[in-house]
Amino acid sequence: MPLQTFKQKYYELLKDYFEDPDERYLFEIEDLGREMVLENIPPEDIAEIHEEAISRLAEDYPDLKLVEYSRILSTPLMEMMIAYGLAFREWIEASEKSRKELQKYAEELEKKNRELEKYSQKLKENKKLFSTFMDYLPATAYIKDDSGHVIYTNKYLKEHFRTDERTRVAETEKKSASTKTESVVDLEGKELFYRTIRFPINLDERTTLYGGLGIDVTEQKFAEEMMLKAKLDAEEANSTKSKFLANMSHELRTPLNSIIGYSDFLLEWPDSLNDKQRKYVGNISASGKHLLTLINDILDLSRVEAGKMELRYGDISVPESVAEVMTTLRPLAAKKNINLKKIIDPQLPVIHVDREKFKEILYNLISNAIKFTPEDGTVSIKASFKGDLAEFSLKDTGIGISKEDQKRLFQPFTQIDSAASRKYQGSGLGLALVKKFVELHGGAIWVESEIGEGSTFTFTLPINSSSGDVQEYLGEQSST
Image (tube, rainbow, N blue to C red; front, side, top):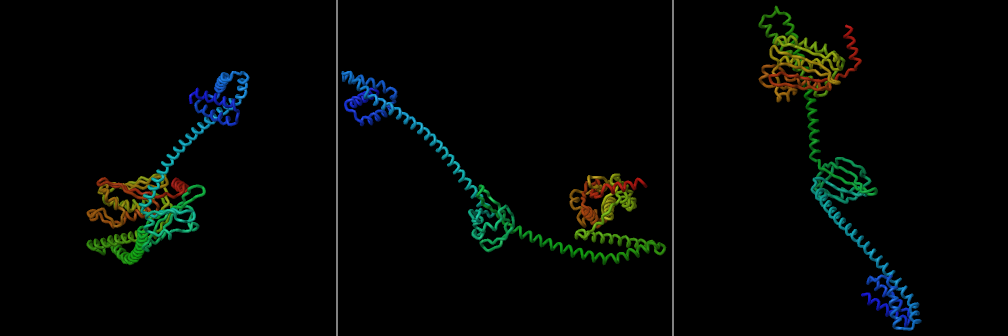
């Protein structure tokens, strides 16, 4: 509305009110006040517009008293219009502020809705990913609520089992994580074995679900049963073999001892035999002793494998034991002009082992070294500390062993190769027994060798003797 139009309306309103004061004009004042604010006419300008309207009334009514009266009479109307205008402007401003706040809230709500849509889409994708993964999982999978009701099962479980039969009362199941193997029956009535894993899923402080995964281990279960049966059969066969060997050893050793005894007795009377007879009797004695040694080795090996070999532990002198074995084998070494050497750590005088088994270990290793070392060679033994272990190394300048042969060197009845077997006699049990005796003591044995460069056999044994025992032995040695 133009300002002049507003002034004219205001003038006409005052004129009508002046001529006929009535309450209806109050409503017209209110409406005109709203139009004033809507047309951006400041309510504060009403006083000036009011004076201008009074002046026009004075022109229309020359009587000054009447004009003054109209000013007094119309002043409340002016004040009411100003009040209406100010109130309406405040209402408009408040409405505009509210509109802006509502718009702001609407924008924030729209933003939240977009975020919610993105979250909902992500949730759908994750749900689809979870369902796809679980349905292609080659295992049963389920989720139960705290009451024991199944609320989710994957495709594998639905295809192989009746879900209702696998629903259990929650009180009968463990509330903590657990793993066990259980027997189940599939839809075809076939018994299967499943390795089941159960675990709690804590959604919040009040809500807990329970998940489970089951993996088919039927084949594994049957394989374990077959392995157990095979193990029992093998143990029974091994026990039968041990009994057979023990009986045969007894039956063979008795006549062999007679053959060896009578052969040695005849050799003690050289004048009663000619050279040819003495040679034959000597061969009989040597062959009998070799066969007796083989029988004893087989019997020892069967005892070890059956777990019936007992060790008689005691504190022994390392230098004395090594010297005794080397003295026994020195004639054998002398036939090939082989130099026997020993290096014993002076801090290693005593170890706690089975004396006879320890000497047998040394005898087999040193005799083997002499056997496979050419003439004018060297065989040496070195004994030293390695923490709480005693380490023994047997080194020779012999023919050496290939990497391939080293893998089967400690197996029973194993010879390096056929050519060597013909040239170097042996039963193939010596090194197997050595390994068994070392491991019985809690030690280990290994070999380092190259063809043509000789071999080094090294084994370790727990010392297992107190410092008091060592010091006592050292004191005895220093006093002699």
